[in-house]
Image 1 (cartoon, rainbow, N blue to C red):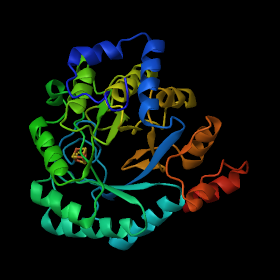
Image 2 (cartoon, helix red, strand yellow):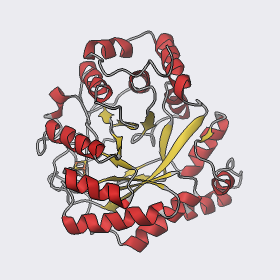
Image 3 (cartoon, rainbow, N blue to C red):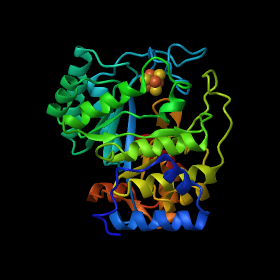
Amino acid sequence: MTAQTDIRHDWTRDEVAALIDLPFPELMFRAQEAHRRHFDPTKVQISTLLSIKTGGCPEDCAYCPQSALHEKSVKAERLMALEAVMKEARAAKAAGAGRFCMGAAWRSPKDHDLDAVCEMVEGVKSLGLETCVTLGMLDSGQSQRLKDAGLDYYNHNLDTSEEFYGSVITTRTYQQRLDTLSNVRDAGINVCCGGIVGMGEDVSDRAGLIATLANLPKHPESVPINLLVRVEGTPLGEAEAVDPITFVRIIAAARITMPASHVRLAAGRENMSDEAHALCFLAGANSIFCGEKLLTTPNPAEHRDRQLLSALGMSPMVQTEEQMSSLRPAVPSDESLKLETATA
Ligand code: SF4
C-alpha cells in the first residue's frame, strides 16, 4: 500500500473493532507502517491550549467542569482581553509551540464575541503561530468570518459514537456537531475533531467513533484522542478508569484509519506514565498539548515533556532557531527548570 492509496472513507464499525482487537504486536506494527508512510515517526507537533472564556457554559457535557448545569463547576469568567491572550501566545511560542489553540465555553459565539475572537486570531497569526479555536457550534457565516480572519484550524469533537452520545450530552445533537464540522470544512478551515475514551462506552462505541471520523468526507487534519479526566462534581467524576493498553489500541486504530492526520494525545496525559506515552507514540500519536493546563484540567509540566521527548530521541515537528533553543533537553538544575516553566 502507498501513501496515495491508504486513505479510505468506507470503514465499517466491525472492521475498526477488529483492528482494535488485533494481537498487540500486530496492531502496533500496522500502526507504525501507516505512520511511517506519512510522517517522520520521531517528530511531534506541539500545540498550546488557552481557555479564553472559562466556565458558565449552558451545555451539559457530562465530562466537563465548565458546564453550569453540573453540581460543581468552575467559576464563570469573562472573555479574556486581547493583550492578555497575546501575552500567553508569545510565551507559548517561546516555549516551542507551533500552534496556539484558544477555547471558549460557549454553546455558539455571539456576534460581538466573534469580533473579539477574530482579532485574537489575527494577532496570534501575526506572531507566526498557527491558530486554532474551539467556540461551540458555528453556522456557515460564522465559519467564513473566522476563515477571513486567517483561522487555520477549528476544533469541534464528536466525543463518542452516535449511539452512546445521548448518554453524555443532551443539549445538542450529534447531527448539530456534524453540521458544524461541515460548515467549517466548507469555509476552507482545517478540521480538528476527535473524542474521549473512558466515559463508560464499550468497544463498539469506540470503533463507531473512529469509523465516523474516518468516514467524514475528508479526514480531520487533527484527531485529538482524549483519555477522560475524571473531574469531581461532574456526572463522570467517578467513571471507571481505562487501562493504558486499551487507550493505546484506540490511538493505533485512529492512526491506521486516518494515516495522514495528526493524531493528538490530548487530555489525560497528566496521570499517564512515560511508558504509556511511549506506547502511544509507537501507536502513531504525533501531536501533544504542552502547558500545565488544558482549559481547566491539569497537563504534564513542560520540562517533563522535554525530558520525555529527549529520552525517546523525539523532537518537535516545527523547529525554528528560537524554538530549538528553548526546547533543548531539560537542564539538571531544578531551579532552572522552575524558571523556564514560569516564563512559558
Ligand atoms: S465541553 Fe464545551 S460545550 Fe461542553 S460543557 Fe464544556 S465548555 Fe461547554
